[in-house]
Length: 202
Ligand code: SAH
Image (tube, protein in one colour):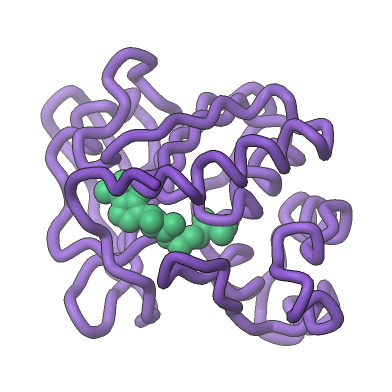
């Protein structure tokens, strides 16, 4: 899998090492287990998907994660992206709006020894103000616009990586330069499952 990521242009060695270390097959349904190391997304139930490895590598590289960074992820899904962030030694807070996925990912991450990852059942469109500010914020669902609370919850110098758009999303890397200034870069096109407001109980 890591060789395929290198061929597609991922060069961040720390990210590649983390992706080599975390077994992706644990995060997939048994039915897809033998395909876990192919560069493809897979269904994880509740109309959601685990992002394809290239997308995880791409977003994680943009975050420039440093050990001990406080990182907020919106869209826990399977928990795979959160595990990659934890493998990079970040302090991870991850938020999921679907209770069934939240419960499953929370148990799996604990069983796998990622006990430092804090999982929360929450609508992430308001961010997670009680632990703000964050050094990094990553959104793994396609948002029509950048939710204002996420910008506000970035530390100065912090980075927000978010796919923005309706049908197709463009990856945005937003850096908080000062209290009032943000630098925005629009990057490549992707297709994510939609970012939705409100929570869904089991
Ligand atoms: N990072 C995940 C990708 C899961 S797909 C992984 O590694 O598997 C995106 C997830 O975002 C879905 O589980 C979806 O339910 C969730 N999501 C969408 N909108 C959300 C919101 N407003 N708050 C929290 N989670 C959200």
